[in-house]
Length: 346
Image (cartoon, rainbow, N blue to C red; front, side, top):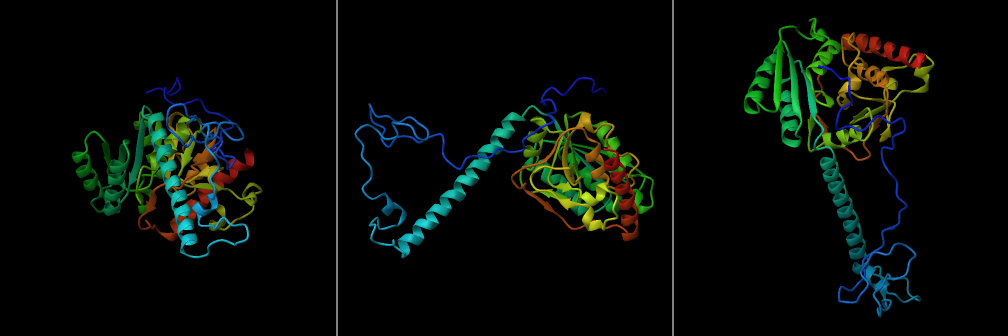
């Protein structure tokens, strides 16, 4: 397998990538004329141009009344049911337009990324009920393939994967190893397993996903669209590393990962993250024993822009997959030290 040439369906990486565009707050596209008969002007004219009304039409005598106001300058307006009804109608229209816009945007993104190949990679180390829900959500809401690496068939989670793979043979590929995960005393580390899945993948966009995450809708298309448009990676959640981290100041665990606003992010969390596979090769920290903060190390090793979509994604978290507290703190600290080293040399 080689990545000598760029993926065919992804735009080149751009140093400056705008995650979203902002409007002026005005309808600059203009509006259609009121009439539809022959000889009437029904074209959109834009703001401040002539020809908004059909020829021969006059201004409405009492436009305020349509919004629940009396229209009489000497009166303060109708404060009764008509006013309340108008406000509710207005709010409902705004909400409907918002949902319509989201639906249109998502469908546009689907069309633009329909030729982009996508795989979702999962490390399976127990919690078979959550594994079933997580995998099924990807099948139900996306067209992506699922690549799953089962570590030791803990609690029968490997059997759940085989059952799902038999049901969806064209969508799910499963590999089983006898090694237990490192956090359970085994030799299968997060970095090595994630790298193995990455090298087994042939898709243009590789999605890292945790098995305590479930999709409630198509959460992948906005991420894939951001990557296809020029970002190196896009994720459900972003992280802004505090300034103290750059100076090497000791920070409590909660202060090490501050949630980022939608748009450009310094780093992304690995619970749901889409990345250009060609860019991730060589960037994944293979020496990371555990996943927490290793996703930050991966983010900082990527060359390009990382973004969080402007609109919330339909994603939910299942029950927490807890590990031994001492182990988690030790390995998280180890990974964060690697993050500090990268930041100190960048």
